[in-house]
Every structure is written in structure tokens, then in C-alpha cells.
Amino acid sequence: MTKGKKPSPQQIAEALSVVNRHAKAAPDPRHLYDLKKNAIQKLLEEHKAEKVGLHYSNHPKFSQQHSTLLIQVGDYSFHIPPSKEDMKSVQHLGHIDGSYRNPKPQLSLKRAKLVLYDYLGWEKPLRKHQRTTSTIQPFGSTRRPRLQMRDKYGRFL
Image 1: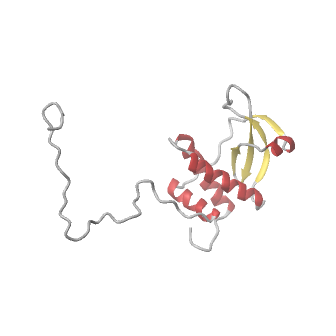
Image 2: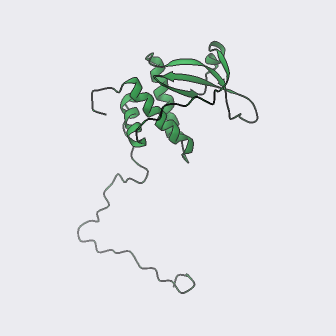
Image 3: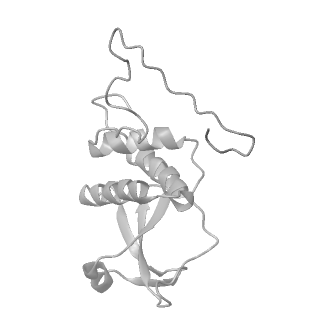
């Protein structure tokens, strides 16, 4: 996103959809779910999203039925964990309608994250393997890595 221009609610909804889809398959989805949660919370505070109702979850926790809160943002809908206040004040809609699907956005995960970072005012985090210091050796350093010789069985010599 360009600096100074805030993304529209529809662009944010598309980005949320992409992030949500990738979070479901990610090995460590915490950051993606944090992005989703914070963006939806900000949309609700700005009245750009609406709490539609509660649904029974398709994935019971500890063999106990629980509910999720359905949020509508533009043409997209999302489920998030409800607060105790939501459980008391929001209408329960019963089981999730499995026939409804969000529109498929044409947006990469990288672009979707940038849209949400821009909307939330967050800095783009460094990648885990990205170094913050230089890897250049000081001038005159002649250290080379020592070669490790192995025998025919793979043992070090």
C-alpha cells in the first residue's frame, strides 16, 4: 500500500480472507491469526464490520460444543472466538451453513499481509532467517571454514 492512503474495507476483507485461508494450513499460524484478530477488532471499533451472530463450531474443543462469532466485512464473513459479552448479547444462529463460501480474492499472502500491516499501522517484521548484522569479515581476515573429512561409513576422520 502507498503511504498515506488507507485501504478500503473491501480490500481489508480480501486481505483477511487470504490470511485466514493460509493460517488454516500454516505450521505456526499464530502471527496470521493475530493479524486477523487485530484487523477485525479495529474494523468493529470503526463500525466497518458487523457482528452477525453466533454459530456452533464445527470443531468442538475438548469434546465440548462451543460457539464462534460471525463477523461480516463487505462481501466476506469470518469467525472469531466470542467474548463473554458477545455470548450474552449476540443472537445465536445455530449451525454453520456449509454451502456459503467467501468470494475468492486475487491476492498473494505477501500482499495481503502488507495491506493489513498498513491498516493496523504495524511495521513489517523481519523474517526469522534474515540477519540484522553484516556477515562481511573484517579486512585481512583469512579464516576459512575447516574441511571435515569422512570415511566411507560417514564417520569424521
